[in-house]
Image (spheres, rainbow over the protein chains, first blue to last red):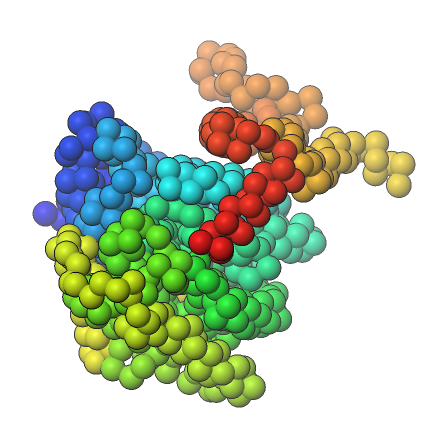
Length: 499
Length: 134
């Protein structure tokens, strides 16, 4: 039993990676079922791991040596409370969106190609999990590329409906590869100065380095590379087209989890690898992260208001929501980092649910997501649209939803740090996000449909996952202690590495 | 300056290649040329790592047994093998990226009938205006 627990960090990552190969070889009919089982198993393993970590106390750190080579020679998978929270979010949302994916795919992908599609799907999931789990700076790059190559493939699958998906996927590939290469350059500088790739080992050796110029150059390259992957403001421009043109199922997966893993890596670099430097990372967080986050919040929200396509609108709003997470990290106090982690979890539930719901409604109009084609669908598909609305209310942060908890913790962290002007901007953008959500509500419920008012068939495999997320949004809005507690432990364990 | 150039010439080449690659990616309109630029950019990073691992008069890191005790000869300088191994992995990643990129270019050529970015942009604009009017 103990032995088995010890292997959990590797098991969680290996399940989707291995089953990707198996699914690719299986007949297409059972591809989806196998993908669901595999992501479900991974989720279950993540729950067991979290329970184990909670039992073990707040400063617990679990280490797994791949191949039995201890660090700094071997690759290490390391789990602390920050890792478990993100792993739980990724596997959970991965599982829910896998459940809904087959119904959402509709005709996007030919039924003979589905097993290969789900192989790429599982590779994305496995790559993102490895990204979060690994404690080796170079291994992280490999997982970055596994997940991004697989997700580029998934985005390109949207070409069956709209050929612009191919161009979006190509740009995503090029920008993603440049971001990853920047990260590798940064790792190269730090490796040259310390001679190690293990994050903790590197963190211990970096303060001993006498010539700090290469270290700071390395930090700059690593952070800018990861920011590309996380779609932080000035380098976010690959995100809206990729999410907009990808098949709906893929958008629900990527929007929920893909950028979250990169955001986690960002804070990990800042607080674990460069934990030994109290000044420089703090300066970057306050003078780079906060302004960029504010611009992302305002720009994403304003662009979402003017967007004519519902799917693109939610993609633009994702840019703003990533801004909220980065803003929380940028405040760089315990409460700020905690609010960042809370929003990582809540935004995954919100956007995952909204894209599943939007996909469920778009199916009725042959997958079109322009506002004009969605008119009146809210009245005609009540189960799906109500679930969608709950997630939408959570997005703008109505009390009793998870989104409110995020905003509450974020704003109180900002005010506690003394930036009341920034808190005002956050509240203003929250108010602005009501506008685009209202445009959706108006189209779905109050706009006249084309003469027909009959109820449309709704698929259980879409509205059940959607309602799981909608109920989770309400549950974690009322009973917030679980997520805020986990996020507090996550932030504490990151700050623990700093001292 | 000249001394620095002579003693660190490999790093200057790395930076030069890096700039060339990145410039091609940004400036070129042709999608295949973009991928070529990306490859040059990645290769420059490979060279950076390989340069790090090389020690002057260092040899391949294979332990040469000497004497009767069977221990390695401590007088021999070895190059650091780890950067080479890392770059072996990075090369594989780079090949996969290029392959996927070229596959996408093929599909783009088939559906847009062009691999020039400005022509593709025109087609995209046409699609945009058509979906607006409908």
